[in-house]
Image 1: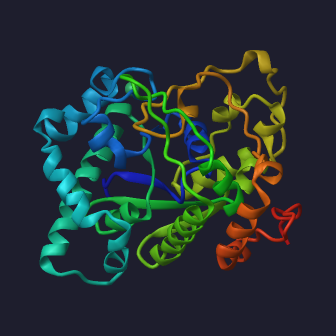
Image 2 (image 1 turned 90 degrees about the vertical axis):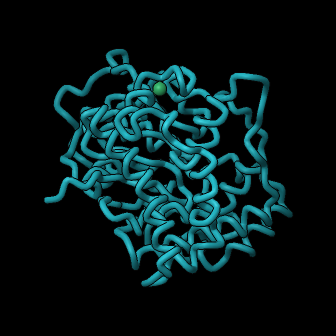
Amino acid sequence: MTDNPRVLFVGGLGRSGSTLLELLLAQSADVCAVGEVVHLWERALGADERCGCGERFTGCPFWQRVGEHAFGGWSAVDRDEMLALKDRVDRTRHIPRLAKSSLSPEQLADVRAYAARYTRIYRAALAVSGARVVVDSSKHASLAFALSWAEALDLRVLHLVRDSRAVAYSWGKQVRRPEVVDGEDFMPTFSPLEVSKLWTAQNAAFHLLAARAQVLRLRYEDFTADPAGTVRRLREFAGLPDDPAALRILADPADRTGSAPPAPGGEPASSLASLVRVHSVAGNPLRFNGGPLTVRRDEAWRTRLPRRSRAVVSLATLPLRLRYGYLGQRGSDSVEEP
Ligand SMILES: [Zn+2]
């Protein structure tokens, strides 16, 4: 046993259900979900955007305590230096280098310094929350690679994948960012071809990462089909005991049991526990939702993604799409297990 902080890093391309999954995992007291730490430097420390609890970053007691514990206060963090370090280490273009078995002394010093800041934050989040595992939904493969070089971190990577056509549909929509307090801002949008390239690059990178870290692959479609089984499997991967109580937050009683035998005297929906608010830095607007969670596969893309866009994405993402079992033009059988 070491006392290295344990992090479950949720990786993959955005719009794959990571915020929903994070909210679900965070309902257990031994899990501390912190959102997307990769955006902390700019969006929280820089723009003082809203935490998942609703407070601004500087007004959130959790993050203030984490900053104190990790660095002796956030004012001690040189944000410009961190952003410069991020540029030298945590970029998709650096992945081929980070995937090698050795680095130059300068590169090694940079990546270790970079990973050490995250390790401090994870350790502080665990100390402040009393949890055993921290969930970081940063998603970027480049950060997962950087963390795989950390000197004192128990890194476990969840590789979340979703049908590329569903992801492309989602990235084509305009979504307002509720965390922005001053003025109005929207999440970026990407064309079908851009999404196809990002989807392939990000997912391929996590296959490569398996040589350096423990990586568990999960399909969004399997998660939404069986939330209870997914939570059980992920907790096991994170080294945590089963915790069916966390599933009380699911709005549909059928979702709380999954393939396991139903609990005797299952609770009616009216006695649902209230949602544990997550002190998350960045993420999908869903994180500001305070009510019971509904886990349903979003299939809007099947009818709303234009035919031409669909053809582009289907072709451009073909190799990995087949590997993950996302088959067929209509895709109606795309999520069945063989
Ligand atoms: Zn907060």
